[in-house]
Length: 283
Image 1: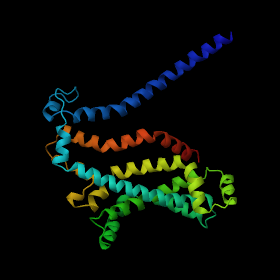
Image 2: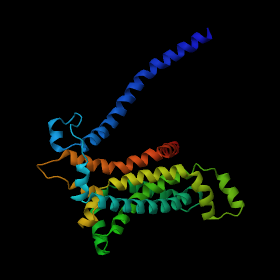
Image 3: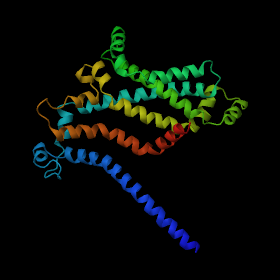
Image 4: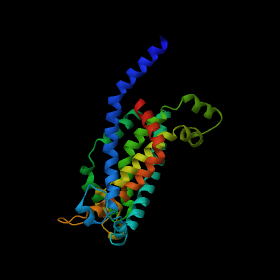
């Protein structure tokens, strides 16, 4: 009788999960198919693509990637984007970790007001700040300079980064921090030995999210870096093609180059991202 009940529950559970599985499969297909289409399209000539856009390539080629590197300078733009993204992420993580730790675990005067200010800053549309920011950077001589762009990225990322890490660090038990202080650990020793290891999932999640934002950003990179040799990846790819003539395989090759780094990053850091998001949502 008990076995029949268990089997009945399993069959009922399986029938109940069937629609959920179908919905999840459809969602997964809608995400994977565009990537498959971009990869397939990037490996075929334009003539072959125009003959049958949704079919398999009749001719495989890597000429589109070679054209992007030789004609459009995508290789140098890739390195420029990587440099700006890495420097930005390092600065954001250092500053946000210090501020988030202070707000979460120290009796900072006006901590609630500081958190409220960070939240309110996240609600300001970036387009509103374009003109005053450009004028300020021009007066400082930072237009056409990577550090001007990095300064904009860091300042725009910090409100969310501090807010996110302060929520993550609040989940670390106070008893552990107090035990470290009793052992003589100061601010930086506690940060290095306790906060960073126990808050690593939140920090890794923040690093991935901020990297994706900086890597895919177009507007500021287009405005602040007018020099062609200093262009980042997104403005370089945006210049491919003309108004009335498109080369979809060439554009697809550019899209795949742009997406390759975020895909690799998410592939290796997906576990930390899920843990960090769970911690952030549970607060």
